[in-house]
Image (cartoon, rainbow, N blue to C red):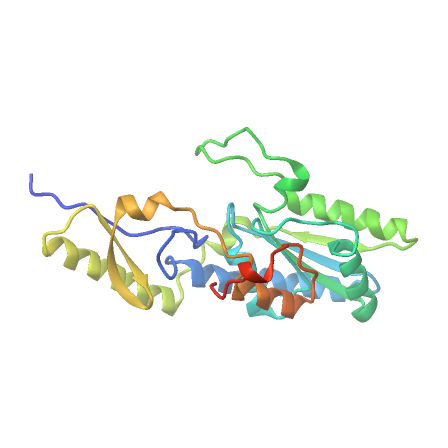
Length: 254
């Protein structure tokens, strides 16, 4: 049979390796802004000690949580799977939240759904789709934040928002619509040129044909916890860095 096999990477988590981004990622980051904005309103309307927590998708990588936090500018703490969560101590997120709340009266937290396995343990159960069940990190953070403020002799009003599938069920924005058109066109171009067993993707802002075995061999990828994106998160949120590294291991990648 004269059949060609062409793939198009599909995941809003943006964790397919080698490509610049997967389609739907930009739309999901945009949709997440509504949840973050709602968390800010809830927190700022429950002064003093108002805290809003938003849990976003990201099973093994924190791209959505990180980029949504940067796009918002209102986030005081961003928790992702690539960086361990430290609750207390000099680099603890709870003392950081306490300080932020005391500085401005409220705080906003964004957490990726796959974060916190070092705290809650890694589950051996899987769901109906075969994916590993993730610990309820959002609910856990709500609990420990409430307890931390109570131990300090104060009460915190903590609102928890889980937009779940809402951020991936929105219509594609113009950027993703254009990207999908380009992916589809180049998939057809590749098959008509006689190629098979490939996936099309954007690499260094150029459309490329990538061998499927090479693409899946190193996927899912994770965000570089020593790269520029995480450094930007630290600068915007002012949260302590719990990822230890030496100067020789520094990287400028994303």
